[in-house]
Length: 174
Image (cartoon, rainbow, N blue to C red):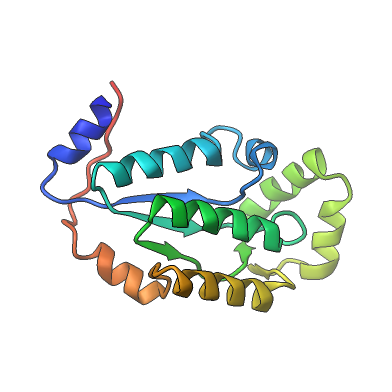
């Protein structure tokens, strides 16, 4: 609660948060050094209860791993319940720079045996790795956001974010 008080002391702010998967166990694999989606959604709800607007980044959505209708619906349902202002999504997929790709492929080998070969066959050394389900999932994303009044056009989300002071301060617990 002390951190929340410090956020509220700011003249005006918005909190941005990334959500990648609704599956808690998968979240622990994909993002092992951060809090799980369930904990982030709890934070989104606390922020809402205290009048602090939020914007969610829906990324990355990894082909063959979390690019499912159930995952996207789960994340969006959490966003609806938390009454997020907007959701930024550039598409269902992931981008891999050289260097990142090697790390990512090593992690695939460790947690999803055989998946590295599937990625390599499908994408080679491409920078952008769109999900084969991109069109279907983006339609689902847009429809759900529109039905619940969540801003989802990237430009509109960034325009909203620019309404807040540009001076950012990394808040710490200590």
